Length: 212
Image (cartoon, rainbow, N blue to C red; front, top):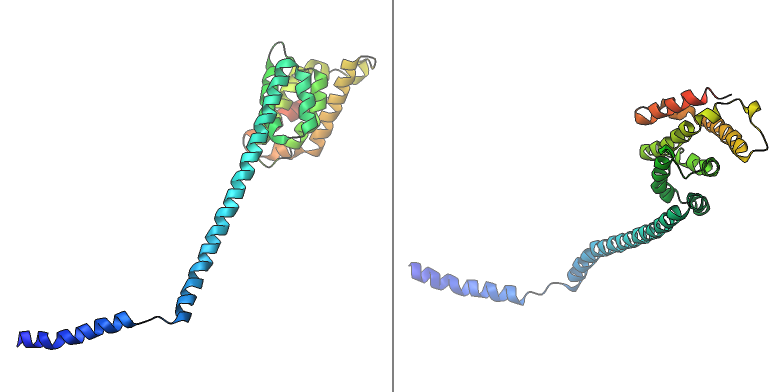
């Protein structure tokens, strides 16, 4: 009986197989499935296109930064004042942030090659850094100001009336003193920032409060 049952069911199964093979999906169903696949595919394509553009833009920025840093290094080796003039001219905050620690370190040396006049010219650029929302940028700017104050503190703390207007160094001292006062009057908020930034700002403020 088992064999007969198999004999009976086999033709039915064969017919079912032939029926399935002969089935054709409706054209509209195929088109609909294709359109569903095309949507996500286009979105992925757009995403990778935008990502590629972002990478190209970043590569361009980094390449430009590298060129400017190479120029800055050449000028630094030649003459520090030329580097300062270059930083002021290009107005590139990123390059300034890269170069400022080197200038700060030089101010801390016994025989610095950075003059007070260069620092007077550079202070407005540093002021833009102190307006940053990033703590790393603030610390770089505050380190520079701290080094300038300590380097020329004996001269800065002298009464302005005793300075001779005929001397360019004395005029630079007056300008630097005035700029530092104005800078701190505009931005005492840094002293309220918690952590390293606030501590450095308070230390600088303690010096500036002594200026006449």
